[in-house]
Image 1: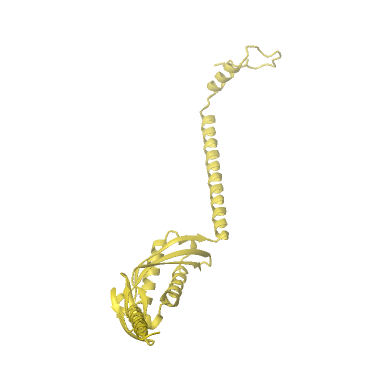
Image 2: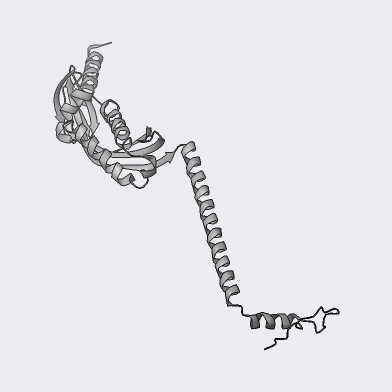
Length: 246
């Protein structure tokens, strides 16, 4: 290899090195994100959206979303009367963009697993345990609001911003569903029996009124209407039938 070729090789290596250094000196943060800049493991800065610079091969950047997130949590809980209820809860929350450094120092990128899920699960259990199962459907909106309030108080100061919390679905145990069905059947049977008894009372009362209103003349007229026109073959005396003697 001659001198000129050696120079080309050196310049090629320098150019390649410069490209690699430049590629590792800049990075972009997307809209709705923040960058946590670590230098040799130490938190140095929080980078905003757009193009940012860093020390190549020394700084490491971890991105955290500050957008609204939707967390769905399924849980089996007990009511105050020890009945099992399966609930689906939807939590909408976000990370406070001004506290990304504190959040990362405390939870790294695992705030959902470390803080949110266990805290939310505990609040769901605690609130629902105060209600009997038969009041759950009627009070579902109230229960959702109480869980949200309790959870919000618990995570206050951590950098979590709670936007909304709803119980989106629920399901009772098979035993309770059967008990409800049996209760409905029993109530329907009781209503039917009550209706039948009322009908019999009304019919008896009507019959009593009817009988009281039948005079001797009405009875005789009814008998005449039913007479076939033949007198009895044998008559033992007394008044002939259907003839009134005044």
